Amino acid sequence: MAAVSKLRRFWKSVNIIHNDKGYQILLDERPVKLPQKTELYVQSPLLAEKIADEWKNISSQKEDYFSFNDLPMTQITATMIEKISPTHDIYIDALLPYVNGDLLCYFADQPKKLVIQQQEKWIPLIHWIEKTFQTKLKTTQGIMPIVQEPKVTNLFKSYLSNLDSVELTYFAIIVPLLGSMILSIALKNERITVQEAFNLAYLDEIIQAEIWGHDTEQQAKLDKIQIDIQDAYNFYCFAHNA
Image (cartoon, rainbow, N blue to C red; front, side, top):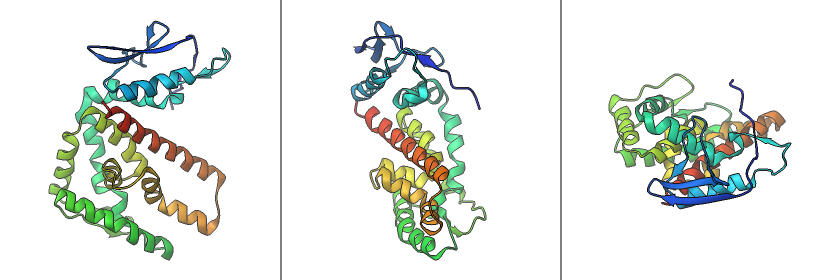
């Protein structure tokens, strides 16, 4: 894993300016620059405010270090500008395996509580996505791989191809976190909340913890995932408030 670059606060003021390129955040008089040295511009005034707030709230103590990991809206925006916007097709191709591997298409066979809750909570969303895309999904019980019909994959590819950079950035981050295109689309369309998306994606882990007791390390990982899901959704909402 690559080392995380550590930085120290050098600025006193944070301001937002607007020009023909969009909204830019200035640290004193210096523009925020991303890891590849690109100057940060966004089109949404709300996203610009949220990014500026992150830089304002960084500790003013000189001995305190920070990284882009402490600035989620800045970090996600950097991903959009420097990685996703220039290479849409690469990220679309990276998401397509989740059509065959969508979590909601793989039902458990035990324990009974998990089986019942998956059927009660997942099936309505499967039916919703089938109606939305005018198609039929294959599902299974167990872990044997499913291969959806080519027309199904093509429908999802067409959907992803019509997304703008903000939307594709949202999907590039949130689909791996949820393990599900279905849940990611349902959340984007406000069919479910962030909390519901997390609970549905991690239903197995939640029920196992109820049966066997909570594991502190596992819970910490789940808490971090839930924060990352919320950050990705917040980014999408802020960025589309243009």
